[in-house]
Image (cartoon, rainbow, N blue to C red; front, side, top):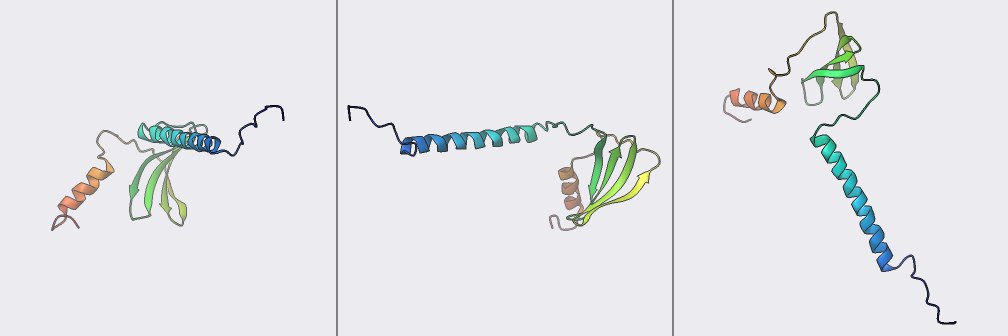
Length: 120
């Protein structure tokens, strides 16, 4: 051999550490972007926008009723662990005023405060 040095092995401690740190940084970036999108409620484009959930009411631990807009029509649907069932299409659309509706947490707290004996 004429004085040539061997190249570093691709499985050396330094290259594995660099690879690991790079992967951790990428995963952290994905989680950070996901958190920002959820925090600021950024809506991702989904189809043509002809469908939307207007409002929903929880009627049990895993059951709820939702008012869904499909194009110009509105449909009342029941949602449970077993699936989704169309309850009735509405002949006249319902217009909800968003300013008068209390957040779900406030409604639950108010219900707990009304019960005899305080918290359940």
